[in-house]
Image 1 (cartoon, one colour):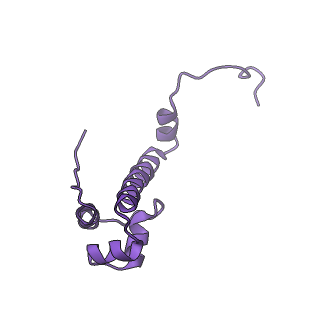
Image 2: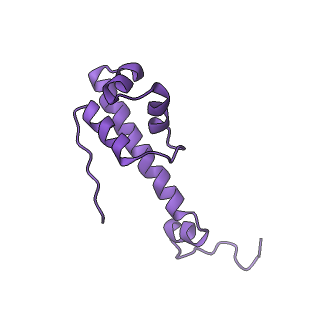
Image 3: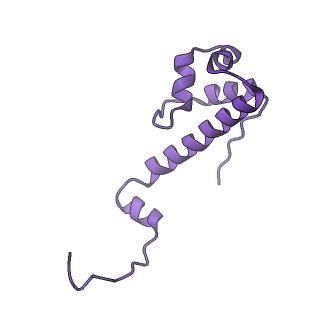
Length: 97
Protein backbone atom coordinates (compact mmCIF):
# COMPACT_ATOMS: atom_id res chain seq x y z
CA UNK A 1 0.00 0.00 0.00
CA UNK A 2 1.28 3.48 -0.87
CA UNK A 3 2.06 5.27 2.42
CA UNK A 4 0.91 8.58 0.92
CA UNK A 5 -2.57 7.17 0.29
CA UNK A 6 -3.01 5.75 3.78
CA UNK A 7 -6.01 7.25 5.51
CA UNK A 8 -7.25 9.12 2.44
CA UNK A 9 -10.96 9.10 1.80
CA UNK A 10 -12.13 8.83 -1.78
CA UNK A 11 -14.98 10.94 -3.11
CA UNK A 12 -15.82 8.06 -5.44
CA UNK A 13 -19.14 6.33 -4.78
CA UNK A 14 -19.48 2.57 -4.75
CA UNK A 15 -21.56 2.75 -7.94
CA UNK A 16 -18.79 4.75 -9.60
CA UNK A 17 -16.25 2.18 -8.48
CA UNK A 18 -18.34 -0.67 -9.88
CA UNK A 19 -18.86 1.21 -13.16
CA UNK A 20 -15.12 1.85 -13.42
CA UNK A 21 -14.51 -1.88 -12.92
CA UNK A 22 -17.15 -2.74 -15.54
CA UNK A 23 -19.29 -4.49 -12.94
CA UNK A 24 -22.15 -2.05 -12.25
CA UNK A 25 -24.65 -3.45 -14.72
CA UNK A 26 -24.11 -7.06 -13.63
CA UNK A 27 -24.45 -6.10 -9.95
CA UNK A 28 -27.66 -4.16 -10.62
CA UNK A 29 -29.09 -7.06 -12.64
CA UNK A 30 -28.30 -9.50 -9.84
CA UNK A 31 -29.84 -7.22 -7.22
CA UNK A 32 -33.05 -6.74 -9.23
CA UNK A 33 -33.34 -10.48 -9.81
CA UNK A 34 -32.81 -11.16 -6.12
CA UNK A 35 -35.52 -8.67 -5.14
CA UNK A 36 -38.02 -10.13 -7.60
CA UNK A 37 -37.27 -13.68 -6.47
CA UNK A 38 -37.74 -12.66 -2.84
CA UNK A 39 -41.09 -11.03 -3.65
CA UNK A 40 -42.27 -14.16 -5.43
CA UNK A 41 -41.17 -16.42 -2.55
CA UNK A 42 -42.88 -14.11 -0.04
CA UNK A 43 -46.14 -14.21 -2.03
CA UNK A 44 -45.87 -18.00 -2.32
CA UNK A 45 -45.38 -18.34 1.44
CA UNK A 46 -48.29 -16.00 2.17
CA UNK A 47 -50.54 -18.26 0.09
CA UNK A 48 -49.04 -21.52 1.36
CA UNK A 49 -47.84 -22.50 -2.11
CA UNK A 50 -45.17 -25.15 -2.53
CA UNK A 51 -42.81 -24.97 -5.48
CA UNK A 52 -44.70 -27.85 -7.07
CA UNK A 53 -48.03 -26.01 -6.82
CA UNK A 54 -46.46 -22.77 -8.01
CA UNK A 55 -44.92 -24.48 -11.03
CA UNK A 56 -48.30 -26.04 -11.85
CA UNK A 57 -50.01 -22.64 -11.64
CA UNK A 58 -47.38 -21.23 -13.97
CA UNK A 59 -47.74 -24.22 -16.33
CA UNK A 60 -44.02 -24.85 -16.12
CA UNK A 61 -41.56 -27.25 -14.48
CA UNK A 62 -40.06 -27.10 -11.02
CA UNK A 63 -36.69 -26.73 -12.71
CA UNK A 64 -37.85 -23.58 -14.53
CA UNK A 65 -39.25 -22.20 -11.27
CA UNK A 66 -35.95 -22.90 -9.53
CA UNK A 67 -34.16 -20.91 -12.25
CA UNK A 68 -36.60 -18.05 -11.74
CA UNK A 69 -35.95 -18.02 -8.00
CA UNK A 70 -32.16 -18.29 -8.38
CA UNK A 71 -30.60 -14.79 -8.46
CA UNK A 72 -27.51 -16.21 -10.17
CA UNK A 73 -29.58 -17.34 -13.16
CA UNK A 74 -29.98 -14.50 -15.61
CA UNK A 75 -32.04 -16.32 -18.23
CA UNK A 76 -35.52 -15.26 -17.17
CA UNK A 77 -38.00 -13.87 -19.66
CA UNK A 78 -40.71 -11.29 -19.12
CA UNK A 79 -43.25 -13.97 -19.97
CA UNK A 80 -41.98 -16.15 -17.12
CA UNK A 81 -42.04 -13.23 -14.71
CA UNK A 82 -45.58 -12.35 -15.81
CA UNK A 83 -46.78 -15.94 -15.30
CA UNK A 84 -45.18 -16.02 -11.85
CA UNK A 85 -46.83 -12.75 -10.87
CA UNK A 86 -50.21 -13.96 -12.12
CA UNK A 87 -49.80 -17.27 -10.27
CA UNK A 88 -49.57 -15.41 -6.95
CA UNK A 89 -52.27 -12.87 -7.79
CA UNK A 90 -49.93 -10.00 -8.57
CA UNK A 91 -49.18 -8.00 -11.69
CA UNK A 92 -45.79 -7.45 -13.25
CA UNK A 93 -44.81 -3.82 -13.70
CA UNK A 94 -41.74 -2.86 -15.71
CA UNK A 95 -40.71 0.74 -16.11
CA UNK A 96 -37.84 2.83 -17.34
CA UNK A 97 -36.43 5.35 -14.89
